[in-house]
Image (tube, rainbow, N blue to C red; front, side, top):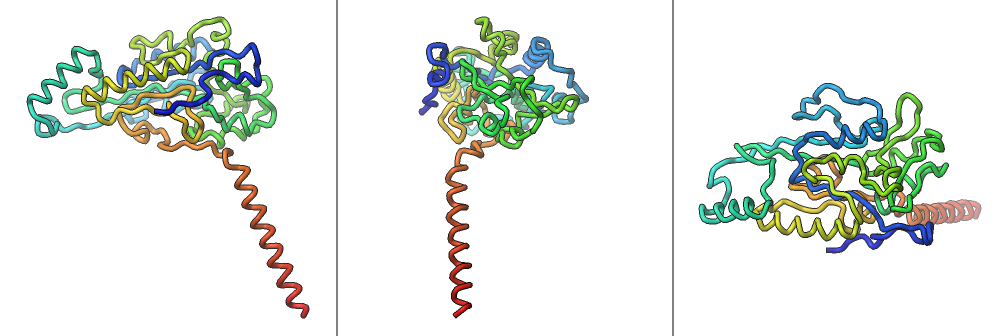
Length: 300
């Protein structure tokens, strides 16, 4: 398994002040949907209240990440067939896997009685190649010495260029002032050697904070145990070098990313901007040459 090369922060920018790259590993298999992370985030960062009525999609009353919701706990209900026949395995195999799950601590809170609950606390991914940062014209978005991506609210001019650039739809403008707000990974707490508020509040350790390379190793071990226990669809999301270079906040999912409302193949939209402009320039030159040839040919 390949991981992002940038497991340490950008020494070219910070020199001796560069820190090990910090991030989140969210293990959705032990999320109980308590929303303690949402509350802790709002309280510490003084994020305005955004709780509304239930969406009709299970117990979700925040809906999505936005300027006033920096952590969003998703609730996905899946009906599952019950019985040994539906499990597609023998009694012996089913019993063995059940024992492994119980003894090794890889059983999940989320399955039983023909219903599977998939719960996941979503957050800004703090991408290695962050398109939002690349398109910001004022420098309001910047990369910290911990490798996280933060918005400086006193520099943001509300242009909104970063909003469509994000492949996850994380960034959003606050209606009251027009500026963009999102998760900072508690940058102020990191500078004081404190754990982010959401991770500290999580009662099941679903949200784990630490150095990114250590989190990758921990996640790989957890995935192996879940797979051995019969969680065939379990996977790491954002741990590998992908279209955004890997995440600073990655996930262990129990199903495909689309089930959680996440893009399966996120891509930094400005990553290929140079080649796109080069192709457009070549096309323009070819068109100009064709027009010139047509005009000169017509005069003859």
